[in-house]
Every structure is written in C-alpha cells, then in structure tokens.
Image 1: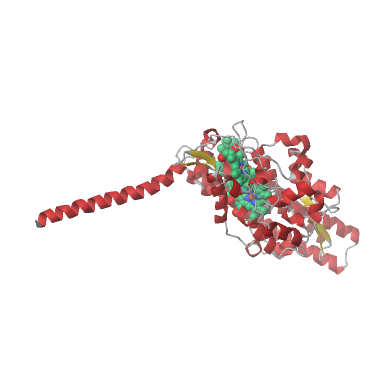
Image 2 (image 1 turned 60 degrees about the horizontal axis):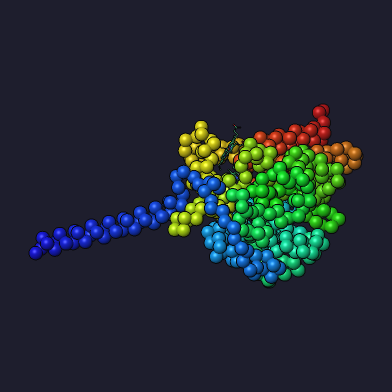
Length: 437
Ligand code: HEC
Ligand code: HEC
Ligand code: HEC
Ligand code: HEC
C-alpha cells in the first residue's frame, strides 16, 4: 500500500513537472518563434489592399486606433514606443556644452531623445523657449494636417494656442498619418505605402526626391537638419539634393543667406545650432544606397498565432535587437556572432565620442579666449570678426557630429571629418588670439 502510494505520488509529481516544463518551454518557444533564426524580410510580408476605416481624428486624420482592427500588430508595436522612456542629461554628461551654447535654450535644457510616444509631452515641458507653433512640426501629425489645410501661416501661430487645440481634441504624437497619410493600406508593389506629408521636404527636394528611398524619407521628414525661415517662421530644409546634404554645403547655405540661430553676447558671434542630421549622415554613408531606416530600426517579426509577418513599428536600436543583428550578419560576413557585431559598432562609437569630448573641451577654451579678447577691447572689430567666423564654423562642425544621434555608427568617416575640421578651425582661431611672441 505504502509503496503504491509512493509510486502514485512519483507519477503525479513527474507529470506535474513535465507539464510545468512544457508550459515554460511553450512560453519561451512562443516568444522565441517571433525571432526566427533566419531573419524574415520584406519579401515575407503578405501585403494587402484594404479600405481605409472611418477617421476619428478631429481634423480628418485616421488615427492609430482606427487602424487597430486591420493592423493589430503594427498598431500594438507602435504603442510600445512608450518603453523607450529614459533620458540622458547631456549638460551633466558634457558640461562644456553649457558654455558653447551660452545664451541659447540648449544651455538650459538638453536631454537625449526618447520614444515617439513622448514628443508632445517633451516639447511642452522643455525649458527651451517656444513661442510659435513651428516647434510642433516634428511632434504630431495634427500640426502636419493643419499646415496642409491652412497653409504655412500655421507655423507662426502661438505655440500655446495650437498645442491646446491639438491636445484638447485628442491629437496624436508621431503616428500613422505622419508617414503614410490616410492611405495606410498597402501599395500593390510589394511595398508599404509611404507618403511624405511634411511639405517642406517635397518643396526643397523637388524632382530629386525620387532618388531617395521612401523608407528613408519617412524618417527624414524630422530626422534632418532644418531651420525656421526668419521671415515667416516656416520650417524649412536647407537641402535640394543628396549632394547638398554635406555639413560643408549646408554651412555655406546658411552663411550665404545670412542665417544664424542666436548671437552669443560674450563672444559677439552669430551662432548656428545643428538639429539632428540622421537622414544626411545615412544617405552619405556606406549603407545609404542599399538600406533604409526601417532595415536597421524596424525588425520584421511574425505573429505566430495569426502568421502575420510585419514591420515592427517600435523603433529600436539594432544593437539591442536579435532579429536586426541577424540581418547585419547577412552582409557583415566577416563577423560570426551578434556579439562581434555589437563590439564592432561600439568600438566605432567609443572612438567618436572620445574625440568629441576632446574637441568639445578645446572649443570651450577657444570660446573663453575669444570672449576675453572681445571684452578686453585689445582687438579691433575686423580682427574679432575674423575669429568669430572661425568660432562659429568650428562650433557648427563640432555640433554636426555631437547632435547626430548614432554617435558615429551611421557614418564614422563623416563624424571624424567634422571633428577634425572643427579642430583645425580652433587651432587657427587660437593662433590669432595668442600670436607667437
Ligand atoms: C515614423 C514613420 C511611420 C509611422 C508613424 C507609421 N509607419 Fe507604417 N511603415 C513605416 C515604414 C518605414 C514601413 C516599412 C517600409 C519598408 O518596407 O521599407 C512601414 C510599413 C507599414 C505597412 C506595410 C506592412 C509592413 O509591415 O511593412 C503598414 C500596413 C503600415 N506601415 C501601417 C502603419 C500603421 C497602421 C501605422 C500607425 C499605427 C503606421 N504604419 C505608422 C513608417 C511608419
Ligand atoms: C514627425 C517627426 C518624426 C518622424 C517622421 C520620425 N521621428 Fe523619430 N523622433 C522624433 C522626435 C521628435 C524624437 C524625440 C522624441 C522625444 O525625445 O520626446 C524621435 C525619437 C526617435 C528615436 C529615439 C531616440 C533615442 O535616443 O531613444 C528613434 C530611434 C527614432 N526617432 C527613429 C525614427 C525612425 C527610424 C523613423 C522612421 C521610421 C522616425 N524616427 C521618424 C521625430 C520623428
Ligand atoms: C545600417 C544600419 C542603420 C541604418 C540604415 C540606420 N541606422 Fe540609425 N542607428 C544604427 C545604429 C547601429 C545606431 C546606434 C545604436 C546604439 O547606439 O544603440 C543607430 C542610432 C540611431 C538613432 C539614435 C537612437 C538609438 O537607438 O541609439 C536614431 C534616432 C537613428 N539611428 C535614426 C535613424 C534614421 C532616421 C535612419 C534613416 C535615415 C537610420 N537611423 C538608419 C544603424 C542604422
Ligand atoms: C546590405 C548589406 C549590409 C547590411 C544588411 C548591413 N551592412 Fe553595415 N556595412 C555594409 C558595407 C558594405 C559597409 C562598408 C564596409 C567597409 O567600408 O569596409 C558597412 C559598414 C558598416 C559600419 C561602419 C560604418 C562607418 O561609417 O564606419 C557599421 C557601423 C555597420 N556597417 C553597421 C551595421 C549594422 C549595425 C547593421 C545591421 C543593423 C548593418 N551594418 C547591416 C553593408 C551592410
């Protein structure tokens, strides 16, 4: 009896353990299957033609929730951009910035970017001044739609008024309309239906727009260098083709039109602030001709329950995503594992950021020396202007590298070129300030 009981207990115990193991394996496998060893690609997506749902947006934009029944995985994954919520305080990390950006908003408040879900919240709470609605250009499709409906005069409207209109009417942060317009339904040519909704891009590029992949333009609507036209405050892009996207050509453009973002009192220099030229660095880089932003930031996943293959709309770092790392290895065949790939990229980033710190501190010293000369009255205006020009230009090239979000991963040659150009200019300026005795 005793033995039989024990045997029964053993059998029950074993069954429980087996069930538990199968259950856990099920969870792991179910999850893991999303990340198949052989990476899925655009070719595995079953593109379909769908009828657009009713628009629930107050301004006629079809919102993410409206598409949820047709594209549940895409809508869900876009919502997951909330997970990217950490912010690094660049002013604490690199204190020399406070001096370089002196008298400009970025000297007061400059944190790293985070997920698209936070665009409206972050623009509202920044301590950088925002008087006009043009600040909302890259934050919400509802500003895009308003410009399309009412014209460029929207850019110079009051920030507070337009922000209130959008948020009080249930407007969205970066959403479907931004990159697809209301026509999200897939195109027939085995490719997503992407639409450039930000008019300043189509206006600036004209016919040259066709030479850029739609999957680069979609992101490049905001991840670019731009400026606010002083006359009408309109968001404007300073490029007319890929060739004009270099930091050199863009600097010349701003100088030719006599543009500056702010005047720094202590040095008397008319300064420029670079935004976030990711589209430029990617297009001019080694991947620019054959990969788009989605290829490296939007993994192709499969919902194993419904067998739907789709581009995840949660924008991630390729270094933190198994699926994307597998796609890198398809071309980077000299690397065997994902870890080797990560190390390769991180080494590049360390090289760039170390150099950035070195040049940033030199730029700060240059700024101090120029401010001193400016205040002491020992130099005439002509001499000072020559040095101010060197300082303005050095800051531009330094900034171009600093504010680009990939830390050199997109285009390390370009990052290095910017930093060494800045260093040359600093040397020239310092030589003029401290003539050999
Ligand atoms: C920031 C830009 C952006 C936003 C916002 C965005 N998409 Fe996309 N979408 C893309 C890109 C880029 C692709 C992939 C293009 C390619 O194939 O290279 C894509 C692909 C698609 C596709 C084609 C199928 C696939 O998986 O590739 C559908 C359908 C789609 N998106 C629907 C949506 C819906 C619905 C929303 C809102 C919930 C949305 N998108 C928001 C940029 C965006
Ligand atoms: C409508 C403008 C807009 C478009 C279009 C857009 N972005 Fe962004 N993106 C932003 C803004 C603004 C932020 C910063 C948000 C914040 O910090 O509040 C951001 C942040 C990001 C981040 C997070 C950065 C970090 O350091 O964590 C990534 C990654 C990113 N975008 C990639 C993309 C990709 C890839 C595309 C195209 C598929 C794209 N974005 C299209 C405006 C845009
Ligand atoms: C060949 C792959 C590749 C392509 C193409 C690419 N990126 Fe990146 N991107 C990277 C890598 C690698 C990083 C560094 C990630 C890290 O530091 O974790 C990065 C970083 C970023 C970041 C900083 C946020 C983060 O996660 O670190 C943004 C924003 C970004 N890319 C936007 C873009 C945009 C916009 C495009 C298209 C114009 C683009 N990328 C094209 C590989 C790529
Ligand atoms: C379609 C092929 C292809 C894919 C896919 C690809 N790469 Fe590359 N990558 C290249 C080529 C070609 C180069 C240039 C190699 C050279 O100059 O020696 C390169 C260079 C690089 C560089 C150096 C860039 C620089 O400017 O210093 C980095 C970083 C990089 N790749 C990261 C990635 C990452 C991360 C992925 C995956 C998310 C990836 N690559 C996917 C083809 C590819």
